[in-house]
Length: 366
Image (cartoon, rainbow, N blue to C red; front, side, top):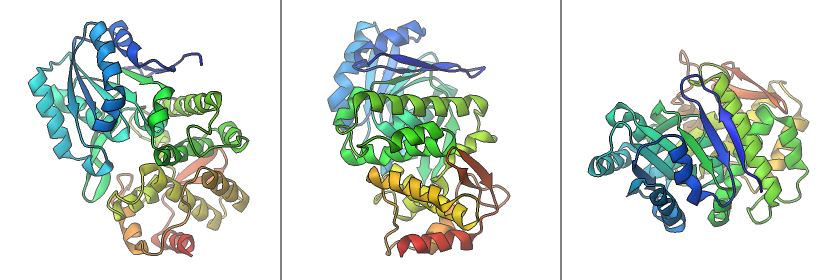
């Protein structure tokens, strides 16, 4: 598969998203080309580092970098300030300077924490994102949103920190657990719903969607590339989420609330987003914003990916509704929702009441 470079043309912090198979050992050379200094801290988790740490460290070493490592526990429940403190400790021990770089080798949790540490260590050093999950490749590693969770809500503590480079090697998905792959497909479908009807239709026409091994390599590369292009385009138009970028939160308002209500243990992030997308689609249908047939198409596609669209009866609906008010997108006390108008077009509104949300959650539990 040929390599692709997608420019993210931000005026102050431009960078590239590079997508190329079997490319981890070339990361060091790419960092040299971008003038990054020798001291590097690689942040990862034990599973990812076992699979890919040596390839990254060897590539950095051959390019004359001096890499140190910081290995953190895997899992959303470890996405806390306590974990970021461990990155700070490793940065101090490694003697990182203002010109140094943190390399985030892992999924969205590692990328978010490493990016936040880079944004705040010495008031800001460089970060390079090397996503190893499909979710991070198409979403978390792109756009500069970093942060950690607060007990009362997801990603409430954070900062914007654009990377110097996003380096994507689709081959690493071979070791991604099947559930993680399926969960990430929610974000790919999301791009189709919010801005890319052609991507949505492309996915509908694929015969297999639920695992890395069932995906044709060219089809997977195309899905990653188109998702990354969509994310990059939105970020360039609205870097700090002042307006347009909020459309990327389709499915996230209720999704984050469900994740929080289940203590980040029951659902993967993408599974929460899938449930949030189902809720948003049902709200839009109830309000007459789009045809129910479109909701059926979205639901069918998510079910083909093995994503949840039903809410278990034991989950407290009232708790989920209350947690939507802790969402960082709340403005003037009103929860803002991203609702679909058509496949490829969404709208942001604060006209959704708690009763509307409760109604669809009840229907999803029926």
